[in-house]
Length: 172
Image (cartoon, rainbow, N blue to C red; front, side):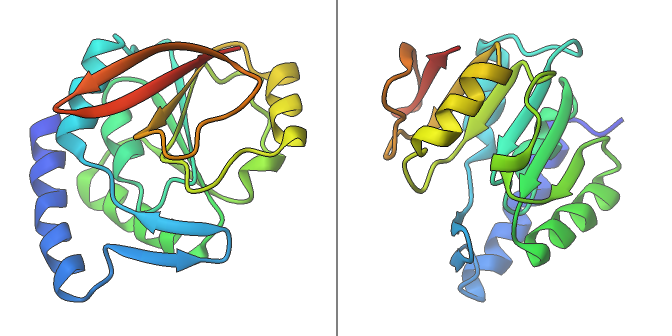
């Protein structure tokens, strides 16, 4: 079984390559792709005590790194609109031999009724229609990494600080 340390080290190598090729941040048809810090995410998963009973869903999962890491703790599903990023996620997942699942679709059409933890490195505000959908289907906690775009009209929970990086929680 792949360990969190192996996943973190693997993506450190990938990040060097991405930065050399100026691919670590880019626009997609639905937003901006940017990489999350996996050391912060590993601490985060331990702090929230994510478990195999949880269904973790990443809204806009990019190159799959957060989901691949989450998959060693929980059932992990990445939803990404960009076809190239989904293919990259699947490639990384195959190399690391984890059980993360990747879906190529707009996350606004996903059924969140079985999801226990939602995660987003949000690059825009959630619209009212999507918030209404979550309010109907989702009965868990939404976590927003870095909180540049935080949802409105949702009960804010606690902020988890890891190495000066905030992860904000919202309760449904």
